[in-house]
Length: 547
Ligand code: NAP
Image 1: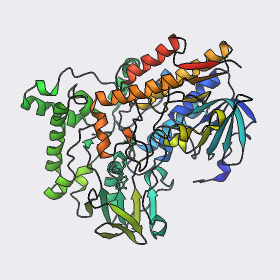
Image 2 (image 1 turned 180 degrees about the vertical axis):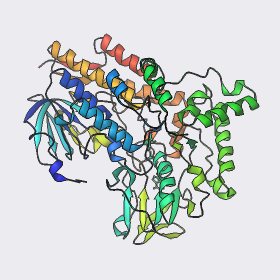
Image 3 (image 1 turned 90 degrees about the horizontal axis):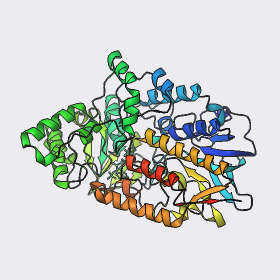
Image 4 (image 1 turned 30 degrees about the horizontal axis):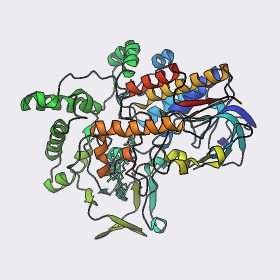
């Protein structure tokens, strides 16, 4: 998707050798570039997209906005940036997030380190020189000591897994590859496939414009309203005055959020009290519902079921047609065992005459046809198809690059049965491949995880350079133990149950992918402590090698 090939070269021609290559110019890539440049390392960044922003540059679909509150879903490392940037909504839209990245990148003069419109296609480790040879889709190769990835956990789109797509005569789009100029849905009959966080955000906006929308749903979701709204000056000033305290708090919360523990369990209060608490949390919206109502929703199945029942009743009270309401009602799996989505008028949109819900749980989509698609039992005609079919989470963004470590070992082969990393940073056999929020890093508010892991990587590079080490990599024992701890952590909470409803937590959303836990559920706070312990204990679990 090269919009302007002439914009590819944002720097002069890439040099033949640098200290560090950074892949990606999103939250991770920008911050690690800043940290490494501060230390005097030469850095060459590559970004496949048209500019900075990572996920917020690619996911330009209408309705895209954060699910986390504006004052935690941002960088916290710079008090100046926090004070200088002014947010306009509780949950910033994609254009506002993109503008924020532009601001940060310009403020820190980061763009000069990146080549945009340039995809890294391969990275091979050369044992003799101890360097990585990194190849890009413009035919260039650059060598580096440290290969640092900022390629995100949720960035490799799940290509629509349907036969016949090439025969479709209308237009089709994956939400994560949305055209910069937007899509005109006026007078269009649209088929929308997927009802995860993305499908839930895009549906109400498409429905406003299109002639008709048919929504294909395989698994209904526990959608809580985000309760987004514009901010006023008073609340913005209050937050700016409290950033220090807020940023301290997100480092001690298991999900990296600035919530206080509610200090009560769902089954310890009366039914009337529970309903009132859920109602208040529903009115506060989004993650307030999961984290501020009760402490035990993620760990106690019976407690969780009370939240499920509350949401089910809400769906039936919002959706007019009882059959549609029941089809939209999730049953048989705990709230939170699929990533909990937030919506804005999601269920309300099914009250429109021009929106139809089709349940494909028992009647799957079998093929795309020239004029629409076919399920096993029905045919549908469309002008436009929108695929909100998700991502090959965690490993996909790595395995789509031909990354080879010692003895030509391909990362895709090594991770065929699931990711293996120590603390998400590093994997055995791949010296100096350093991953910012790599596979098996926490499932939590991403920016704070990015900052903690990028700072760990920068500090580790300091340690290597100051002590005469050439490289670092995980030990096999440590990465096996970390994978086991990840599985155990998912089983300690209800997250593991999502496997039966295709959760990406367990790799279950991609046909043919190994079912293995992809993210750490043991708590971001515990994870940050484990990273500090690893350093304090002389890089226990990592092999440091001199040349
Ligand atoms: P997703 O949660 O994986 O949802 C994909 C949807 O496509 C699901 O409804 C899935 O059904 C459906 N699907 C996939 N293959 C299908 C098939 N063959 N037939 C019918 N339906 C099919 O992907 P996403 O919505 O893009 O979200 C991914 C993650 O990105 C989220 O969990 C979240 O972490 C992040 N995200 C965040 C935000 C935000 O913070 N604002 C917004 C969007 C996304 P099944 O459920 O049955 O598999």
